[in-house]
Image (cartoon, rainbow, N blue to C red; front, side, top):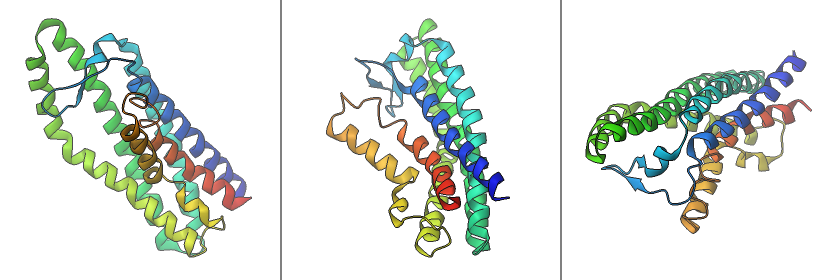
Length: 219
């Protein structure tokens, strides 16, 4: 069983890397990009990006999040060996967060395609009106998805500190929240240089770290 868990953890790490790659295809917009629209959720350089990039990004996120789920299964079951409630909470919230991640990422990519189509036959005002309506309807699912990914972060940190996971305590830093803070900080320091990277890929890499922690616990 440990061998199977190790394989699943490896796939979880690979899934995080795939999600990060999908993020790059979606968010690597190039120089001169501007935030537009009422909620500033429109990127001007979307019109310069090929449609296939958004489709490939969704596909990578779909496969990546499926593999991340295997990583959560492995880690959750490892924790459940000694702390069942903590382990199953990690598993459940991890699954929900991964599925929510697919929804969030797909909707973001579709926003770009809608914007491109609207701009071909209309104006920024028309595109902004359409995307604002979509944005308001998906705000709650977006929020729920992000919160659901914070929950396994907390349970894994607890598992590391209480000994349910036999890994170095420094591993509490290997999670999406810490990686997100790092990416946001980079953008704050230099918004031009770090406009695209590393901000967008950091949370996905953080998801992959749960797979790495599972691997380390079994070694």
